Length: 322
Image (cartoon, rainbow, N blue to C red):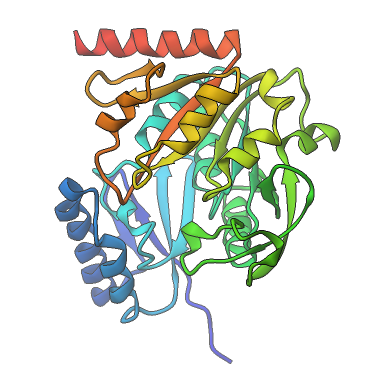
């Protein structure tokens, strides 16, 4: 019987490793340097190279200490998450800005397409406000790792195994990368059969209340519009929806739908101003979406409360740059 090695431990603040041998420390250094070198090119090619290196590594997890109250585990050498081994790398920093600014707000995170639960781990941690999170992930293999991350953080966030769509049902989940599994093909595609839930079903099932406040992360790989359609009632509440705009989509399909077919005010963080700019003309995305291999988050809300918070966030950004 093969014994399971205990995870490597890595502290992003101190840069210290525990439980890693010389070869593993060397590999971690290579992964960190690769992240730094590929950063000017939007990390193009990093995932492929990291996954090649992973073949030479022992099969064990690494637990990254994200802050004093947040630990995030993933397979050592994983191409998608190993960028976290570079302390200078920040994952989806536009989301982090809003989460940090909302630490004092009593909200629930709906982490749709949670993968291994990175944002649920962070948002439920004390430095970001110890918020309730419901992490929703359809993939069986990802769900095991998601549950593990809930466990090593004291079981402080909820996990449910569903895909998000426009209505209840089933679909087939397919793909070769754990970070890009999709139900785009529906029930007719080959792959893992998964149950599908609409955002409004969370209201119907009593998991959330129409009187609550919500930040809704939609990382659902091509079914963003269907997910928005299935959340009409929830999006009328004090909610912000955070959707990925794919860099390889010059038509800005998700943003176009939000802008033209919903009552939501659309925002995008403009790196030039470090502000959340209101999108009234999609041409702003032509300027912001400069890399075809990455995703860009856009934000939509009809909530007066969240509109005020975004204005407050912009005001604090202006003060920081003065």
